[in-house]
Image 1 (cartoon, chains in turn yellow, green):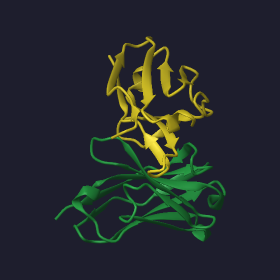
Image 2 (cartoon, chains in turn purple, orange; image 1 turned 30 degrees about the vertical axis):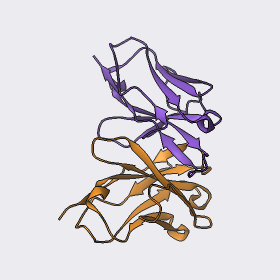
Image 3 (cartoon, rainbow over the protein chains, first blue to last red; image 1 turned 135 degrees about the vertical axis):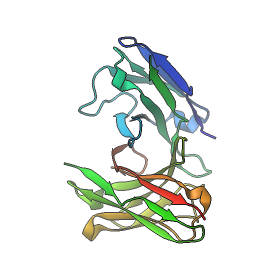
Image 4 (cartoon, each protein chain N blue to C red; image 1 turned 45 degrees about the horizontal axis):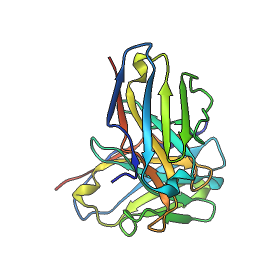
Length: 112
Length: 119
């Protein structure tokens, strides 16, 4: 069971703005930066956002993210058909049960 | 170009052993952690643990501790994920990914290795 909760699905039409939420159930995670990964159909995940809101080079500025307390969100503005993918949030969980990276369950974004 | 290239798909029987590889290029392999991530069919991503080629340091997720082993050979820029006795439930795609710190983001990912375990 993920300690990062994401909605299983989201959708939008081309040009729209969509947001995907990521909520932490463990306060330990709330102190660590959130990462977002994009997984296009049939491909490996790629880094989309790191350190809560930083875009790696090559990621369009249509993608943005924020974090407040134990919640984070990813926003995609000016939706493109090629944005249809699974999106995962992730963070380091330094709980005593075993520190490690935890992933959200993933959100499947459909571009209608 | 920085890249991680993983070994090809494997089909194994329950109880067999397996070692898959992840070869890095375009960067100083010894100085970045290599994380391993499992994706079971139709499911999400699961962090298995992380390996540091510089000193062969490892950290395992409790969910995978004792069932898999991480290793590597920095002289050939390659990390390995090893099972001594596979189960049908190990059927999944396994990804390796680079991270500058053990608790940091994974910025470069391999293409994935599909492992199928079936009798």
